[in-house]
Image (tube, rainbow, N blue to C red; front, side, top):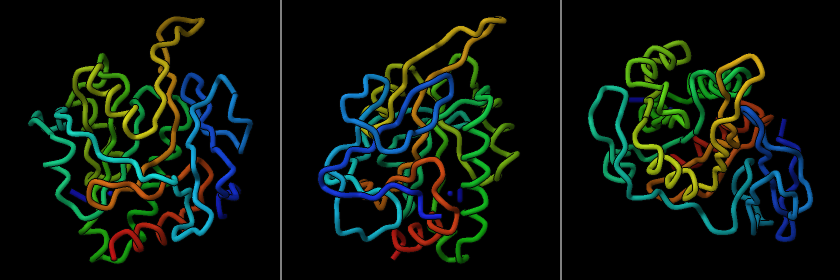
Length: 217
């Protein structure tokens, strides 16, 4: 399986907030007490990557979910690639999810072949009620057939999201029926089981490509 500078100036005093909505996108830097967001604290000042670098890298949680081929998928044991890019979203997401997946697909195609072969892109659903294995596989094939969908029990998905700094607010009814799922939309870049960089919405594709190449070194 395969995976403008974003306008956030990182410093040790800055927290980046991902604001939740029906299918939400991170905001520009905002006050750390914003009740609608989840803070990514301790951003480093001396950046190695063009994306945002948490002061303490996120760790891949030891949780077993289910891949879109129906097989169990342990987030540590089965992410065997040197680089793993993780994005939480859902197939009924009306706006940001397709946009970010298109950008990830564009970045993935632009990677040098050796780096692309060393990179896995994981799409973890925040809506396992509707996102079955088959639904995930059909949906992701629209962006890149190498992308892997992951589903599972909602408590396990929420635990994985929390470990990776992703906020999920749950089901939000639509006025005309149905529901959306509120979630923050950062992409988390792992080298092995540690994630030293995340990319917020609006990060240029060229910056993601540069960072993935650096992760693969």
